[in-house]
Image (cartoon, helix red, strand yellow):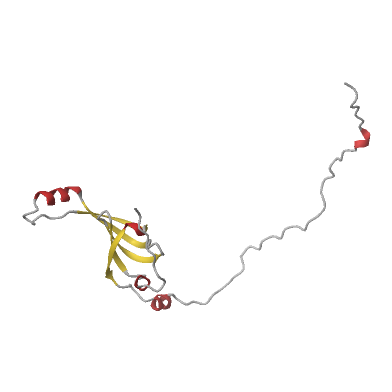
Length: 152
C-alpha cells in the first residue's frame, strides 16, 4: 500500500535545500540532517545526518506509567552521514536551522590564486616512430606441400 506523491518543480521544498531539517518517518525514527536534494517521489538526500529512535524499554515504561507522565524517554542516537530517505517512509519534517552560509559567500571564500603551469623536471622520452616489422616472419609456402586427400 505505497502511496506516491507528485511534487511540482516550484515547491516550498525547493526553497529548503541546504537547510537543516528534522525528518520523521513511519516507524517513529527521526533524522536530522542538511537537505541536499529531493525528487518527484519525495525521496530526500540528507548530509551529516543523525538518527534518533526511542528504545523499546522506554515504550514499555510509557505503557506502564500512562497516568504519571513522569517517565523519561530514552533515545538511541547514531551518526549516519549521507543518506537517502525513501519518500514513502517520510511522515513530516520541521526546519531546525537555516542554511549555514549563502551560496555566493561560499564561492567568495574560495581563494583566487594565479594559475601556474610548469614543465616536468625530467623530460619524457618520445616514442619511436612506427616502422615495419623488425623480424622477418617465416611465411608458409603452400605450393611446397602436397596433400593427398584420397589416401585413406
